[in-house]
Image (cartoon, rainbow, N blue to C red; front, side, top):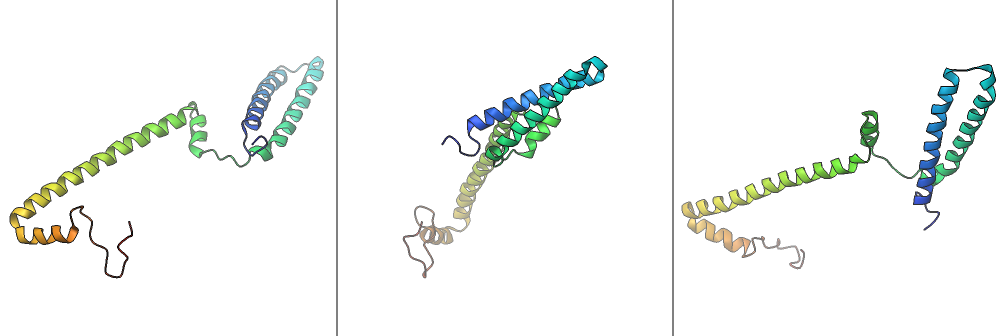
Length: 151
């Protein structure tokens, strides 16, 4: 699988190249902010390095362009938050939503059981017909034109 789109080697190469690029841009900013004529060779070297790093990024691009990053990760970065916390936060939100939905399901089950008990008290004959129609497992029989072996 080496050479497949988004392989770890390509991602690591892109990551290290981007880190070098950012560091060189930072250094270029320092050179430009305090530019002296004798600093021209250093400035030229930084610009040449940046161009080479951009070429490296362009060479890696076809191998990683299929990777999709959720926009929320970019929002995390814009807010100054660690993008590695995105997955953790998503899992915590999913767990909270799961617990909320489970609570609703449990409440509906309790309501159904209570409703059946109360309906049985008021309409015992109709409830017996209902139970016979639904069957022991609570599933309705298939319609007459449907095969009975469907799930």
